[in-house]
Amino acid sequence: MLQVNFIRDNFNLALEGLRKRNVEHPEEVLHEVLQMDEERKNIQLERDGLQAESNSISKKIGALMKSGQKDEAEAIKQRTGAIKSQVKELEEKYDTTEESLIRLLYTIPNIPHQSVPFGKSAEDNEVVEKIGEIPQLAQGQDHPHWELIKKYDIIDFELGAKITGAGFPVYKGKGARLQRALVNFFLDQAAETGYREVQPPILVNEASGYGTGQLPDKEGQMYECAGENLFLIPTAEVPITNMYRDEILRLEELPIKNVGFTPCFRREAGNWGAHVRGLNRLHQFDKVEIVQVTHPDHSYQALEEMKAYVKQLLDKLELPYRVLKLCGGDMGFTSALTYDLEVFAAGQGRWLEVSSVSNFETYQSNRLKLRFKGEDKKTVLAHTLNGSALALPRIVAAILENNQEDRGVKMPKVLVPYLGYEWID
Image 1: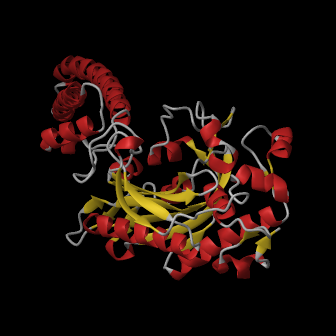
Image 2: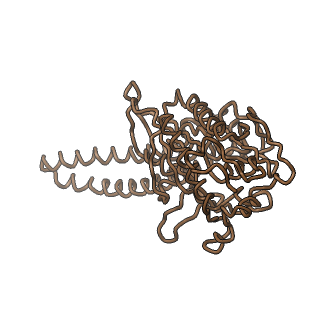
Image 3: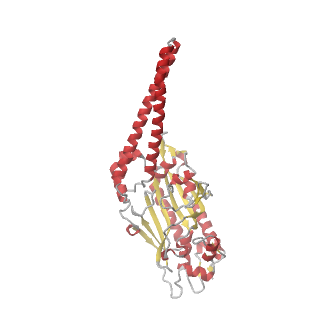
């Protein structure tokens, strides 16, 4: 969440950032934050003053008792009782005001980086670059992946719906092997690039959800375990970043680079239709996630390196792709700058998002209380970043659709050692 001091010291910058995000009445929202913070400070000042008075009276009572002036001591004891009552009321008022302030800050999105373009939706995103040739499929070899998976019996949506419900497919035979091959390939590549592999839980508590910004869940996208106050993760970003909640790191530990593979769970409420058939949108899917904790001075360099890393994965998979810089209206709530990477799926004739790489600056670390000791020994909020490297479903869809031939679907060369086969036929 945003820091109150940042809003106070950079009011116009914060205002411009919220306008870029199309937040309604941003000036009123920011003024409300400052007003509530001022109220909190005044309560604290009054409480501290009464506490100081109480301490002074207590010393005076002690002195009177020592000098034998018991009646005088008893007389001023009444004042200490009144002060204690007032202090208790002020502490309750302070806690209520602070809680209200935090709830308000939770509703305010991150301030976009100055390079983020204005815009309201995905149509306003900026295409940064396009890499690779769009496949030209021959007639009869231009099927969308949902037809190919039935033809080769590698993914079964009907069976998944029988077991669980729509959006929970069953991978079979070469389809299951392809999933495992992609996961192992992505993890091996990350390890070679200096990421430490971790295997986090796929259930997180409420504090973890708040820490990375998934809670409060305004869009109702998280699955909650009834009665347990636990949530199925929408991405490995949540548990991996929360490994450092309430931590003060050493400067020499930065940057911290972790990679993790997990299943991901998203309700995707209200997002179903013809454009999200097959693997294009699921309730459960596998993803490899890279996460970094960095020094604030180096986070945008880290973001560019993470983007370049995802690009080379797509290059090795021989998939055409493009890189987009998201506009203010299409960015995630917690992000300061996000690049989306989309692959072209020739059977559908459309671009599919397969990765988002984001810098959150201090937005998550302020919630997490994730800090490090700087060279001057002062504690400083770290910057957090994450990226999909990669999400499997749409990668599988593009591989199937782009590599159709008479014999079947030819696998990218880089995957063959992991697969043990060259063709799905």
